[in-house]
Image (tube, rainbow, N blue to C red; front, side, top):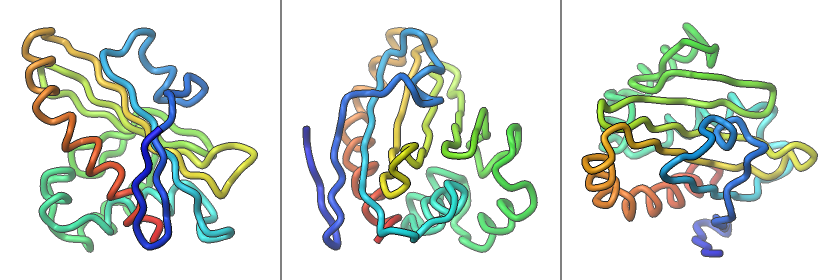
Length: 166
């Protein structure tokens, strides 16, 4: 279990949870992670608000890489237009599934599929979970690429979760 803190918020890495949408998406993913952070009580009324903060509170350069947009207003407008409905996209991220507590996004890079979700943990709405699942479509290329980006992915996921809820 590793922890990263920012503004008195601590992000903890836990074992993957198969009860979540992202956890049950692949029967055998090539990579899985799960990070949790405690929220201030009543800060968010829905997972939609958390996800909007995730996208809009990212530094511009990460938002450009993540959503193909630097503009916070563009992201907000995109979300207002389609919300987080299944099939709607925020930048390159398509909403694949959702329920009242979790939104699952996905993208395919040709050689691998990438899925991530945000979930307000049922029974504990003050706990936010960010999870990732990766499936390599071309095993060698996927492994090579993800070996390069995995350390950055893990670090940025922790830091961005803390920044989102700060």
